[in-house]
Structure formats: C-alpha cells, structure tokens
Length: 115
Image 1 (cartoon, rainbow, N blue to C red):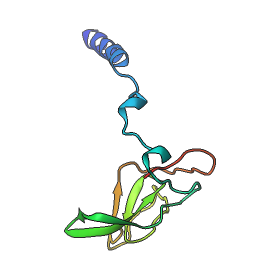
Image 2 (image 1 turned 60 degrees about the vertical axis):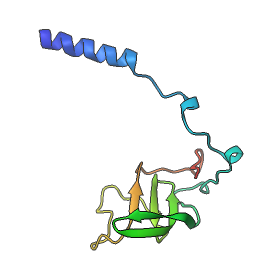
Image 3 (image 1 turned 135 degrees about the vertical axis):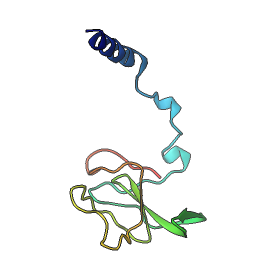
Image 4 (image 1 turned 30 degrees about the vertical axis):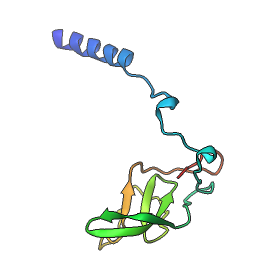
C-alpha cells in the first residue's frame, strides 16, 4: 500500500514539475537567422555541405555531410532511406550516420527541416 501511494505521489509530482520546453529556450532558426531548409517531401536531403572544420568520425575527418529529413546526418553520400525494421547498415557497416533523431518523417505537407 505504501509503495503504491509513493508511486502515485511521484507520478503526480512529475506531472506538476515537468512541462514542455518554451520555444524561447531554443536556438533561433529559420530564414531570418540565415538557415537553409531541406526541400519538402519523403526521403529527402540537403545538397552536400562542405564543412569548414572537419568532423572527426571514428578516426576519419569527414568534410562533407548531408542533412536528411529523417533526423540524421549522413557523410559521403545522399543516404535518405528510412528502414527502422530492417538492418539499416550495409554488411560491412560502411554507411556513416549521426542520428540525433531517427524517424520516418514526411514533410510533403507540413514541417520544415532547417540546417
């Protein structure tokens, strides 16, 4: 009984204490900030972006990347497919990704991916 009460009180406190992050706390973004956007669609990416400072990635200093609308960065090629249920990488794990957010995003109708 005491454990159940503690669990309920803990859940209620977490609801009271936690709320959405206000938009003002995000970094400014958009056209006014000089950002570019990925074209709208399904399985789309930015053109290749040449980095001014190489990005160290498992011993290799990458100098080109693509921003993919599915929430990740890809190095060396425009790899814009989404397949969460399958093995995503080649057998030799040659595909280089940084996935901060990985989902099947379709920006055909709404939504903009800024970079």
